[in-house]
Amino acid sequence: MYGQKWSLGFISLAFLFITCSSAELLIQQVTGGRGTEINSSYSLEANLGVTRVFRDGRPSSKILTIAGYSVIKGRPEYYESSAFEAAGYKWMEETESLPYGWEVNVDLKLFVHNPKQHKYLVVTDGAVKRFNAAKKEWGYGQLISLATFQNTNQGYIVQNACSFGAEIFIVKPAEQQEKVTFISNPPNNVFTWKVLRFSSLEDKFYYSDEFLVGDKILVRFNPKGDGDGRPHALPIYLYAQGFRPNAVATTTWGAVNLRLKNQRGSNHRQLYSAAWYPVRSDYGVGVNNIILMKDLKDTSKGYLVNDAIVFEAEIVKVSVTNIVPA
Image 1 (cartoon, helix red, strand yellow):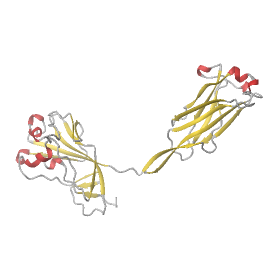
Image 2 (cartoon, rainbow, N blue to C red; image 1 turned 45 degrees about the vertical axis):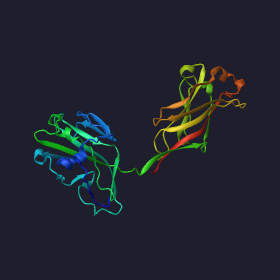
Image 3 (tube, helix red, strand yellow; image 1 turned 60 degrees about the vertical axis):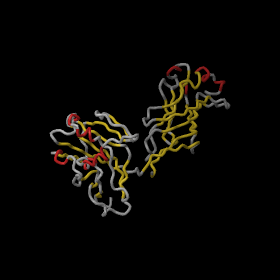
Image 4 (cartoon, helix red, strand yellow; image 1 turned 30 degrees about the vertical axis):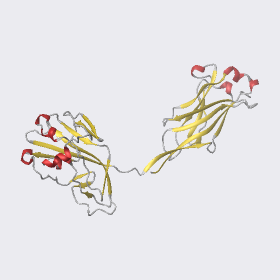
């Protein structure tokens, strides 16, 4: 940003205030109807949107240890830590040098070390903190009750020392979004496949040429049947097979009419199918019994003419995915 690392005034790390008697305003639990006294275990606490939970890992941005807590216990002054760098910014410094209109969004967690349990108490509210010229300080007014913190049996003060921490992650708004739109009756949405010499085809799947409607699509069938329909019915399936050049490779919605054409009339055998086609190319939709083999081979019915059958795929709706500005 502007070729330099920004510096932000940040005096809301709660460990800065825990050394003074007035800190109760910041670290005690609120009572009197607005909250409830937190229990000593602190395994998980939610109060006024703030959660407290233990974790093993140390904070990633800042750790402050006070060795000799009894020296400053009860004093009215507060301790201000040194400036530190986190997420590409310097904290605890002035903001006058920042450009007009500056703003930084932060996911903030504060920590109290419990050496007795070998864990850190993590305090957060899940809300993004927006730092700007009008609001330069953020923190939590109810980090931990002072009575719990100062009770040595709880394990926060060990050998007259205590530690606090902060974890700061910058939340940057996404500049792009993935947008899915649906197109009804897209251009060139009907594909016809005439299969010749049907009676001489082998017992295997045959695939049409690819045709392009959104994704690359093809039709396949086995002249000897498939699945539960074998060998008494003719199957037909539609497959999404890869993507156009520079297309976004993602799941695609397709609604299609699959037909076995009646070459002597309008009594076509038709199947409507609508489904999400995953990125992998081995997934298809269709049916294993578009027509019974006995009806197909009855040339008077018009489906098998001159030893040829005709399949048709009509794409009635398809999804298109693009990456666009957010």
